Image (spheres, rainbow, N blue to C red):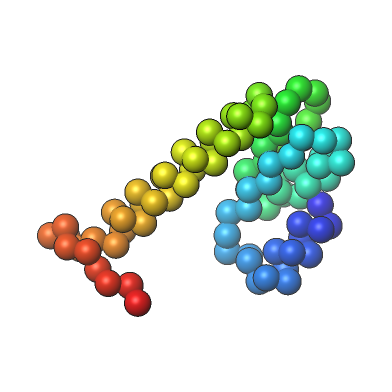
Length: 91
């Protein structure tokens, strides 16, 4: 948890949605911290957890990350076009 807080503070990432994925007991403090920041905490595998969400295994993590990437890309393309569907140059 403290390591995540240090990284977010060091990089001045206060206005982001933090996402933390972990599979170990040592990740529980990270889940707790991310939950306090209203982020997404994701436990991989079985067992009790403070994480708000769970993925079954590493293959599900890969699928989640691919879906997340595709969603971000689609939002970027949608938001980079004007009302006429023309792309806006973002240099």
